[in-house]
Length: 556
Image 1: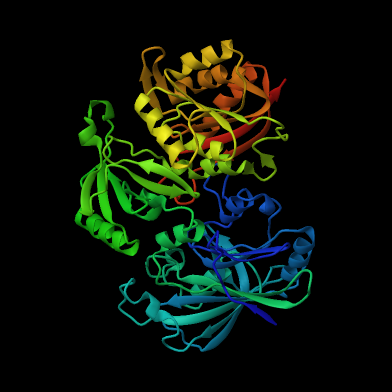
Image 2: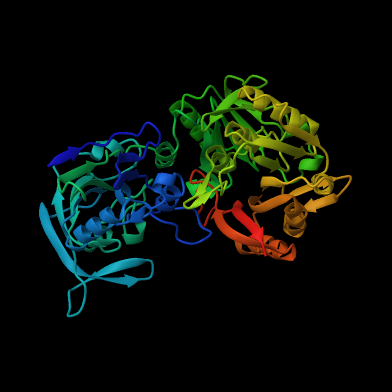
């Protein structure tokens, strides 16, 4: 038997193993296997499948619950899909899970075989009866101290922890959780099944053994157990390449258990944001995060709905802990250096929730089966129009990939900032255009000049105001913006549209764009909708706000 020990990928930390037929990952807790809905956050399957062209054919073979961590195997080829499906169907795949419970486990070994019946959000174990499908799990009580000590400083407990190994012989939904609860030792953190509250569900898919689809060799994959890890940091560290990116969201409000509080990492500094003053637990957590990430300093910004009435010095982040940041400093995102400033008012120079859309411009890969440029562009550079360009992060990524960009913005200051971002990446700003002025006015001017572009980026603020256009509100005026941009878009070229208007439903956002395209006698040939990235987790306590879509537009 080949035994493959977990090893981090030099690019993507969650990847354990990959060849032409298999992709094996260590799924972090807090991430679905696949998206629960078309406008929900991506599961790890969706996120991986659209991330790399070589992963476009990934297929789901088995699943893990959202709050369960550990081994997931995806097939990459038709041969692997057939082989693994057959092995799982025949129960030839062996899976080993590890769990913690704070209840008594009366038997050292036991087998639970029952029917699982859905009851609301959970499943209940019932005796087998004719016609029912059996769910079977073997449990083994492990020696005291096997791995309980990993939770000793994170979980306040009044009783001793028990370590249990679980081997599911079948693959029913919630099988281990329901069977453990049925035997009166619900998993720690599994409040749905009567477990004691804890920072996470203490269930981990530690080991999986199967026959390789091509060699037939029995192969075991392992995912290291780390119940002591901060579940929020573990999710980020699984999905973000530390060699390439040092800026991402650490706490996303209610999605990470802190309603109304948001913390971002910008390189060596942390930025906290709330509408209310920080309380003692928040300050304590900030200090802990700063220590865990070796941050040089921590800043805090008060979120306000009265931004236009707030002076820049009041809107700027305020130094809170550690070293003060220099006037400007450089962070890295997808190996792209970008300049940030904490003293320029409400915004620091980069919106982290667009990181993966910037990566799409950098790689030219939008999604599975969706390339940014449909046909090879011969003897010329792709032309990108970046409206509401801000500090030109989108444009820098497109330019690094060989495109020529035209940047429109109502702020000269931000366009100059954008030029500095070009220079940071050793890209001469001169071949690129930086146009100061109202976007609607310049879309009209460019149309009169018969300018045409391969990609047009529309990422307006939710609210803005200019002398030429007046007040722009995304929900009211986005359709007009799309119609103004379409005459500049080549046939079979790509339109990117984005809005962070939190109250605007995704269905309405897409409907507005689609109606504008039809009104201009154009046709959508391809479409890929993208929610906010996984470091901005979505939950009932923290609904999705960011809506982005990539569309290839043809002629009717």
